Image (tube, rainbow, N blue to C red; front, side):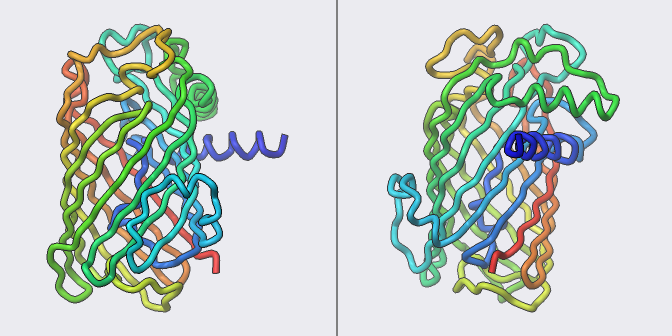
Length: 321
């Protein structure tokens, strides 16, 4: 009962406060400590919407002890100068544009995901580059409990209870693998930095390739320098990251790889294979704590759906030692 209560509390907070998949391996989300805990919340509530990617939550722990995790052996490690090991639990929910009808009418299907992330993050302080590998294992469908959590939250908040969760993507397995690479292109002291990045993922949840650039401005500690466990300095900066995604497959739209009984899915011809995403955020850190707030914009994912989508999110991280 204790663990059941904690699980629903975790997801309820995510629905009420804080949805695309959360990626904490990028440089603008860098944390200088070897051991920390981070809680991330995405929600379109921050953009006054309730549609498409509607919520996401991630609880993440990073520690040298996680090197002993058996799944870590499956991760590609280029053996740069510094390596960090992490484990995360993530849950996300997706809904159509109109929550008041059961028939989505070629709009995004209802879908819920729940999975663990095993990852490593490697930094090369000499050549100013970073590498990360992530293995995601979990489930999509009713078993992810996204419908129960959203329905209960909407009842408590006196919002409309979506009637279409009975038509969500059917239960299936999530097994995904992702690699990311970043390179610092230009930097001026600790007040301005530009990075380029590329990533690729494949598996039963999604197949996607991405390229992007990131601009950081303010006062910050470079994510490509030596790692320090703590600092008494106050850092404050903002970032802007435009990204271009090439979509091969998305189970939250097309249904799972193994289970083809989903009552409603999007045909491949209705999916835009090139999607633009832009994320703007503000980050503040002091001693053993980091706080971030961001807004995210994405171009149309479906040829028949809304022209764009927006959501926001918050993150808080605390050093464990």
